[in-house]
Structures are given as C-alpha cells and as structure tokens.
Image 1 (cartoon, rainbow, N blue to C red):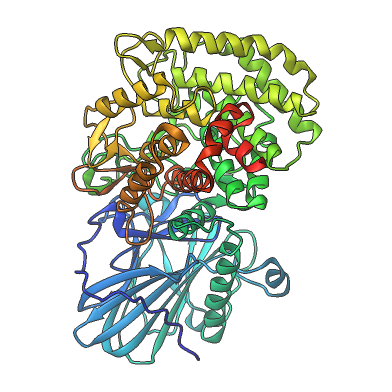
Image 2 (image 1 turned 30 degrees about the horizontal axis):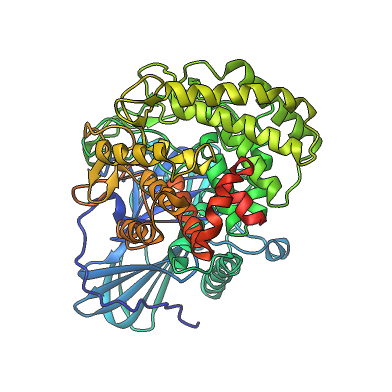
Length: 635
C-alpha cells in the first residue's frame, strides 16, 4: 500500500501543547453534515453525530473529566506541527519524537455523487491514519466515548473481526482498526510500536436508519483519503478569487463549506456550543443554528467566489424553510428550518477551562430582530443582480417581508447582538429596514413582479430621515448605536456597505474617528459595542473596518495593512473563532466561526475591487441602492 504523507515544509520545533490549552489549538474536520474538533495533541474532543446539533459523543473540550475523547499520539512526542493537505479539509498532524517522525491524518471521508451511486459507504465516518515517515515511535490510542454530552458511559462490545460495537439510543457506533485493542467496560486502549513505512488505520462510523456498512481497511481507506483530497481540491479550484490573499480566502470558504448542512443548505454559525467569550466568563452560547442576520454577507461571499450552488442552496433554504412563520421571521432556525431548542444548562459539565455554564438551545429564538428582514431581502437582491432568478413563491415571500417591515420598522427590538437586557430602537435595525425597502424597490425597477413595492418608497424615506435626525449625535459628531443615544457600535461601519451613506462623507469620517476612539480594544482590534472587558474583541468587526476603508473610508494601503495585521490572529491552520483576546491574541468564543470567515472573504473581495480601479468606487457607491458589491460585479 502506497504511503500517504503530505509533509509540511516547516521545521518540527513547536513544543507539545498542554491538554485543552487554548481554543485555537483545535482544527476541524467534517463532511457537511457534522464536524469534529481535533486538538494539537491528536485528540478528538468534540463530535456530534449524526448532525451538527445532535448530542455529543465526545465533548472533552467542555470537560476533560467526563466529556469523552479519542486520542492518538506518540508517547514521547517532542514537537508538533499541523497542516491541512493543501486546498482540502484533510488534517495532518506531524509529531517529532526523539526516535522518529509520525504523521496522523484525520478526516471525514467525502466523495463525488457519482462514486456514491456506485459504492456503498457508511452514513457517517471518521478515518484516522497514523504512519511513520522515519525512525520509530511508541503510539498510544485512547478511545473514551461518553453519550449525551458526557452524561452516560457507552457499553462496548468486542465482535472480533467486525470490530467494536457501541449502541446509543437509535444509533450504532463501530470502531475498527488493524492495531491490537484492549477493552474495558466503557473505553478502548491500544499501545503499539510503529516503524518507518508502517501504517495503522482507524475507522469510527455511525449508522441510525440502515444496517451498518463495514468496508475493509487497508487499500479501501487509502483510496478513500485520496478521493477526499481530490474532492476538496476540485471544489476549491472553483474559487474565482486570484488576489494576494487567496490562501486565507480559500481556507475561509473551506471552513464555510464544513459548516454547511448539505441536506438542507443551511449554514450554521459554528459547530460548537459554550466556548467562552471570556475565559472564566458566562457568555457561553449554543451556535449550532443558522442565523438569518448572516444572510446578506454570506451570500455576497459565496457569489463573489463563484460558488453558485452553495449560494442557491442557502437562498432556497432561507426562503422555503421559513414558510411556516412568514411573513414573520425568527432570529435563528435549526438545520431544517425549525424553531431552535429552548435554552437549558448542562450542569454536569464544567465548561472550557471552567467557564460555565454550558448551554444547549438558544434563548435568542424568542427575540425580535428587525435587521434580519433587510439581510434576507438584500441577500435575495444580490442573488438576482448576480444573475439568479426568483420563483413566484420567493417573490411572494419577499413582498410579505416588505409589508411586515412597513408595519413594524419603528418598533424597538433586541438588535443584531442579541443583548438580554430588553429592547431598544437600534440604529442598525433601522438601517436594515431601510435596506429592505430599498432593495425591493430596486428589484421592482429591474422588472421583477413586485408592483406593490411602490408603497415602500414612503417608508424608505421615513426611515432615512429618522436615521439622519435621531441616530446622529451632534455633540459627539457621530452616529450612535441607538436613536438618541451616546454609545457607538461597530456595525455603524456598515452604513457604506449597504449603500446608505458614502464612507468618505463628513458624517461617516467623523463617526469612524469616534468609533475608533470608543471601541478600540488595542492591538489593532475593535470591541463590537463597548469596552467593559466582559468579552474579547469581535473579529468580524475588524474585517468590517477593512471593508469600510476599502470602500473609500481610507486608503487602499490602510485597508491592506489592517487586513494583513488581522491575518496574524488566525491559528496555524488559518481558522478564526468568534472573538480575539486583544491582550494575548488567543481565540475566544465558538470555533470556527462562520461569520468571521465570511468577513475574511468579504474584506478580501472589497480590497480586490478597490485595486481593480479606485476611480470607479464613488460611482459604485452612488449605485449602492442596488447594493455596492452587486453593482460592482454587474458592471
């Protein structure tokens, strides 16, 4: 059997990490149905099967004592370095030992639809392969499954050549390997010697609705790894971006693809729950849902890179799976467009680095967020102006959303950041209600069957006047986060992005100066709305700042310089969490975070647009009523 070694170029001089040391010590593998987090020491510490939002079978990231994990690593590793096989989601961890070097390959196998039609494959599978590239090493494998977020141990049965069988609820897990295993009642262990050229393979699979498929190891696993590499490389080759930030852009869109639930087209915010926004803090939330607020930025990122299938799937999910609540929209939905679970605490888990509570479900399901109407409608407008079509049902849904905005835009709401302190009249929500009216009118003007949108013109004007008069604080010489307020919010940077006001206008330049002063987190980063140190700097907000500069709020050099600086905060695999500790640069919050990676892509696209011809930018902003990004692409 040929060896599968994609050795990194970097020297193996990074020290071995402590267990669960930092959030950024993890990488992600997945198959667009679920995902697993793999630590730098070769431990899978998070896995929910069969779906992203299923109960975890491994959740040691939230409690090393009872959470469950699956670790494969040398007993005497002195250094470690990680890489994805280039342009893929196949993870390789290379361990340097005093006696040799071993490479651990981790993936959830994926393949083309054509191959799936001709070959029977497990419903869900993780493949782990460890091989020795030189010398020799002692390897230890610890497999400790814990069902229902660590609440229950798992009964393990040895079925000989068929492998290890574990039944949990309606599902059955199987562990198979060519290594010798030692079992006890609730865990599996192995200790083996590996020499140069030797390969040991592990397959962990799950089935729920059909008999288990236990394909052979050896060449079948080897070929599956190669098929997965080919699948991901073919997919990434479709990315149309060819600028100087291609590596970061490709890694970000690969992360977005892993957070896409293929059966429905939904894109979750993150694959994890309750990773803290501040170590020791209580701002720990379940992000395994799809937030509509992310819609317009996500669609722009996918379309800007040429991923039409994913953008179309997301559009269809967004407009068809929300039909039960239309014209009202919920803040977030499950993978299949249903209401999110009621929020509750898992008190048996101590949380990441004792940051409790650990929560599942999300209370934001009960909130009113008016901005989501503008984001959904803007996403549809971008889709159309890039060349997409809207069927009669989609047009009816959009018109219904518009009518809802006409009736409700002046209400106070919880706003984009979902505070649990009550409702206010948020400027950002007003901005997106204006955007909803503006895009529907523009769609009407371009011939779409939205004749009733003519009545939206007066509402658009009313909202515009209210923002200009009540959201502007003349003493601060700045727009503010709520009408009549004196606090700022990083989402004010999006005025230019949505085409409400040019980024080089006197008001926006003054707002940017005040925002930089009030929300400066240090280290070139921004807080999202306050500096009370209850959370880290919000990574997406800094990428919004890049776009603000690229859209004419600053120079091209300033935009590129800030973008380069922000890239220094990605982990060694190119991944971002939700937030960044401005003191030490550590990742905070759920990981990896879709919204942050959307920000990376969008900022890179805006920089590229500016570089193509800065002289066209003012025209592009004047045409922002059909959305700046879309108008630029259409031109």
